[in-house]
Amino acid sequence: MNYAEQMLDALEKGNVDQARTLFKQVLDNENDETKYNLAEELYAMGFTGQAKRLYQELLGHYPDDGDVLTALADIAVSDGDTDQAISYLDRVHEDNPAYVQALIAAADVYQTQGLYEVSLQKLTTARELDPDEPVIIFALGELQFDWGHFAQAAAAYLELLDGGEMNIAGVNVRLRYAESLAQTGRFEDAISVYQEVGEDTLPIADRFQIGGLYVQVEEFQRAADAFQAVIDADASYTNAYLPLAQAQRKLGQPDAALLTIQNGLAQDDTNPELYSVGAELALAQEDDELGERYLRAALKLDPENQHYVLAWSNFLLHAGRDQENIDYLDSLDAGGESDPQLYWNLARAYERVENYADARANYLLAFRTFQDQPAFLREIGAFFRTTGARAEETAALTRLVAMQPDDLDAQDRLDELKDEN
Image (cartoon, rainbow, N blue to C red; front, side, top):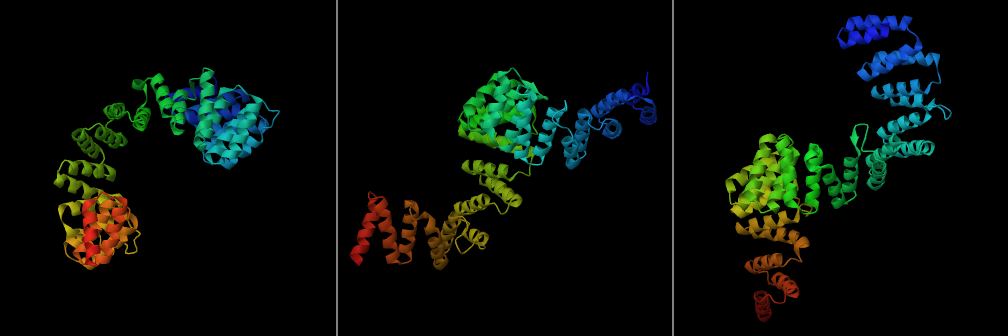
């Protein structure tokens, strides 16, 4: 047993100090072939420092060896030194047997740096030299996918599948193909590929993905089943609770949806969207106490979220807590840059507490957005009638009748106003 074999045996047994001593013997006594084989073994085992030492010594003896240069480039990448990696790879020239492998490795480095055009150039050259190599085609697919060119990625993965390549580098090519199809909006095709693989055999992330696809094609029961399967497999997969609850809502199962939200919150009580949807469900079931508690929790986690702000204001408006609503919205941008519905809510609250000046100001801010909505025109018309603003009431009702000529109440009131004049 030579020193290299003894070193590997010591490492397998956990005798690190002995392995370190034997490594020195390797450096002093073993031939280059043995050192190269040991470097490969050490790199595969994660001992990159010792592997790098051996490869650097070998590079001194064989400065143009493409395998040594690409190995050192791989180690440089793992060390975070991409510039050094490229420097090694640039030394592998076209006449070198390792040139194609160096192009692939360089493309990967450039891809990690976001230099997609350079990466594509390297892979294109590699494919011209070896057009049928699956690893190159796969690398092109991965590049295009990472680049956001999903149609091109799908084409590369399909080419691999047509050639019988189902797995490369530990990656299921069919699943990559399905994900690429989904990203291009070909939801039905993506679902078909997932189903060919077998839904029950899919990894959790892909079960979650197919659940989202079922939502896209409005197959909500299948979506719910997929999301539930994810949760059954791993209850801590918190991303699945919200879409499961939303699918259950679509299926007319509000009780189940609320229970799903509560289960999700038991796993993750820092997700404001779970609280928000839970509040909607609770309020729809007239559980104001739970709805209020969930709304407060959502706002505490994300106080600037306009959706949550509006939901809270709507709740206060519904509950008749007008002064609380006014106090809550007192910092609203008076220039009309906030959610227009908030101005409408604030106008209603001010009107209820008989602060007509502020009510009028906020109705007018809301008018910019809601001037073509009959419900708003009826309400602002009634407000103008209450405050004796006949000209404004006439303008609002005229606009309303133009949109809905069959609104007899509005037409009668408009006739009254004209008679008064």
